Image 1 (cartoon, helix red, strand yellow):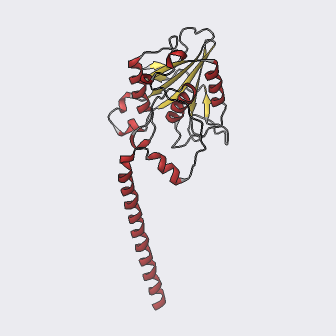
Image 2 (cartoon, one colour; image 1 turned 120 degrees about the vertical axis):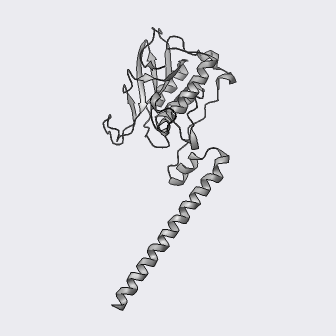
Image 3 (cartoon, one colour; image 1 turned 180 degrees about the vertical axis):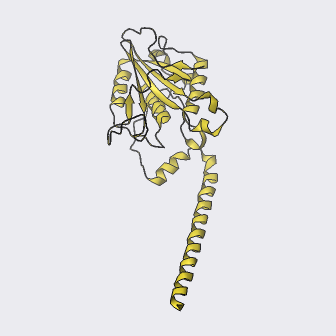
Length: 237
């Protein structure tokens, strides 16, 4: 059942952080469910709600801002949401959120809308809303499943967010200690390594890599043979 990202009942002077994800239900059971959809966050301050999401510069719905941040404000207002979860923020967490929103963040295949929304919630609240999908890719589809699982343990709403004091030390809600941000290595090797975040998948991935390398080597050898034959033909002429 779809929701819509919009202000709930007045929350007074509370700051409420929401995480939202949507996938077209018509794609369920098909490959598109892994690549379809969008995830974002909402922030309610003094009863007014704004949305924030990560969008690539080449998306047709956004204006390419060059080296500017890919965090866009207001794009998701009125968007349907397949699943949502809400967190009340204490003053320290609210400051962390504002700092996170002011950062210059780039959309990448290893830093998508789903991974950014998930990581923002984790870094601000200490709560992990898992977006990890097949082969370590982070997707709106998996985020929906995680949100729904958490909502089954304790339902939340814009006017009834998870209280900040209820999260302290609660392992049942998936609390984790916030970790300091680490510089991200964007080399090809590092990006591939981040895709393999489950040990048992390593051997299968290595086999695929070796197969591609062998295929490439065979193609190179074939092309070299053709070049040699052509050169020999020219020499005889």
